[in-house]
Amino acid sequence: MLATLVPLFDETMAVGAYSLFAQKKNYLLNPSLLGTGSFDGAGTIAGLDIIQSMGIETISADKEVFVEVNNISIFSDIDEQCSAPHERLVLLCDNTVTPDEMYVKRLKELKEKKYKLAIRKLPVAKFEVYRQVLLLMDYILLDHKKIDISKAKIYFAKIYPNIKLCAVNVNSQEDFDTLKKDGGYDLYEGEFFRVPVTRGQSEVAPLKINYIELLNLVNDSDFDLTKAADVIGRDTALVISLLKMVNRMSVNSEITSIRHAAAMLGQKELKKWINTAVTNELCADKPNEITRLSLLRAKFAENLAPVFEMAIHSSELFLMGLFSVLDIILEKPMEEALEMVKVSRNIREALVDHKGDLSQVLDFVIQYEKASWQEVSRQMVLENIEIEQVYDAYTKSLRWYRDLFAAE
Image 1 (cartoon, rainbow, N blue to C red):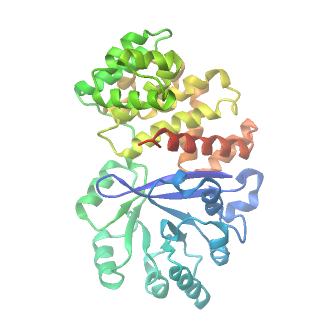
Image 2 (cartoon, one colour):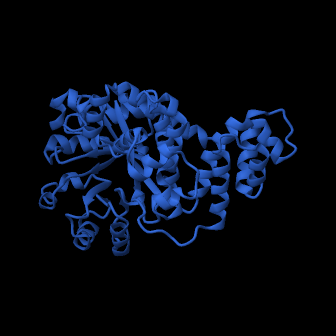
């Protein structure tokens, strides 16, 4: 199936939860699904299938996960479908779950089992009609462009004080800053955290320059291991990370120096480790989701290489995904940011001009992570890509990311 995670942030830009959006079929090959959204099975919940097969820790280490349900699947045997802790799951309804007695009764049953509940797509005019449903909700998702936040805050605080408010459709940093200043929302969902930078800072922090120097060094065609080790030695965090990496690989070996550790990894493994570890450090002053976004894009793009018949470019696709948020990391327009790092012409064309073979994979990755299933389906039809290939590439990326930080 198609599946992706969309983060919800708190006011500090820390991830507070994830929404898991899933679709079992290709829209364009199954036109009947267009009217039913994500729900193509009467008694199964696609998101729960994914959580059960992968484990909720792979989806989200310790955050709640919102999973879509509809007016039919809400009556399914949820306990049987997924064994994840109930308190980690938030069953996300919409206005197809009406305030009729049978739905209210079912929602009460789920609450008694410690599942959390959320609702979206509920017009203001229906708030009073949905009173019995809203009394059971833990969250309500509101489009801040259609709701007067000042009135909503007063209304919910008075009538439904236990409901947490989530602002959706927050697609610019200005929107986020305004909403945060006004107060009233507990979580924020939208593209504001990955909006491309159009104006750059005059300088890049010295520590980041050190990281960029290291990236440039290892992405040369034949870099010097000792030079890389010396640059790593300037940063304690990188040294500790390197030693942990080597110790996991060679338990019985005594490491005598940073150069020794680098030599034990070898050129290929050191390059792979540096590209991921340095990106993590570059993102240290950014929302933690930027690190995750960068690394997942990198691995997902690499995994898609054979799917798009571009296996020969798998390494380039990894770097393209890794650097796809470089403008956000360095707070410079992408063209300026790429002037600081050594990348191939193919990568530059994809990230700056949105042209070339690599850009096709980048666009697919971005559409996928936004759960733009209709566009994803269109591209899959054009490229003759099977849904299983994409799902496999994405889930392997999630597992890779989980294992990357497992020791920490």
